[in-house]
Image (tube, each protein chain N blue to C red):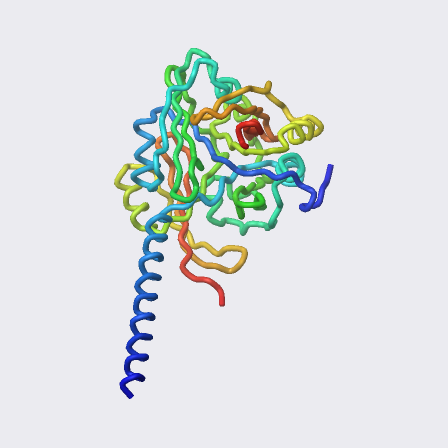
Length: 155
Length: 183
């Protein structure tokens, strides 16, 4: 099954959704450290589809938070699981979210101050020649977050 | 001469106002875009196999594929053994440049996908008006699909959604808002 890019049906990326063990602990990472806007939080219904697709024990309680940026509403979500054991994130990490942050140093300082695991900063060179800085850190549940800042654009 | 000075003064005023307006709008845009979601990135074991899911089933546009340098930053971030070989692919949707990436990990023994299949910790959610086509293609690719589910958005719009795994257990949920409520 192969297609050219011109034959595709339209599709739009809506959001990434991370599982967390404690929403009250996770939200400050995404709002205060990263600067995302909290759109809403709700208790998930007992028949929520998340039970099925995440294969969560029905005895667990779930809450769902949606976050966004001014120009990207609802681009990120967190699903809190309570009442079931959330196993340690297996390595290697299977996913990352990548965000461009103009306040790169501020995010880094706030991540460290929040006691998160922060990796050494890396140098970024994009495929089109832009240069910048990038930094990865883990939220309290081991979910990988990468921020970057472009400093130089090629002529 | 006086007319000339008036004209010069008027131009200075126009340029000054334009400059201040530009500064105002620039600083407002800067403030609004302190953070921007660029993409989600997922590990896969076989990029060519994954293309059939993300490009052919979902309909994302494949923008670029490249080999990542040995020992590069991705090894640190994902905590990938240094013996692995990595390739990186990035995809766009018609309105979202480079919104999704896949990182292929090769040459790692014991990269066990079983637990990941059973307890995914991450989902990506995509809207597709061609919902039925996507599902038909996912079935044709032999992917593991969950039952379809009807849902209502937080603002009251009804829709359909269905989840499936790519070949590495990464969870993908596709949805469509009912056309009646779109109008």
